[in-house]
Image 1: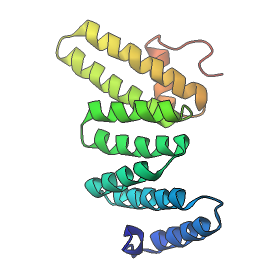
Image 2: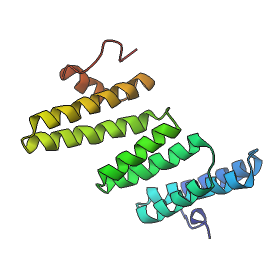
Image 3: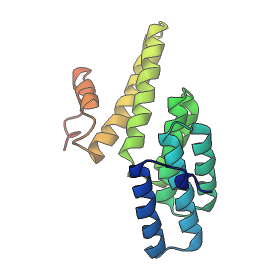
Length: 173
């Protein structure tokens, strides 16, 4: 039984009904539709904190999905799970893969920057000033890219860039 048939709250049931209708009328092949079902079930499991289950669904979706943009979103969601579990190196790997497939994912760029910023803070706390600054510079580069794509987002990052002198004049335009 698909995961979404197990959901018992109104919003999940409504989403499932809508998604099923879309799947029926979508002009996509069977493989793409099946990939979407696995992706949808992965999102459902992820929302409930069932990360191992979500990863299994995402892995299955990746074996079926051929569209690079959609594959990018799947990899991005997998990166979210690894980041939330503290596996920053795996999260970074997945976010970078997501951006390679779908360069229009400012949220992946932002999350890469957040990890580099976190690692920079840890390096500085450990007494590695130069290493920390290098990581902060990497974070700045990714935040600038994200902000260029979504100028109304990432306000805290914009403020950090300004206060640390890492902003560029054109970053907000």
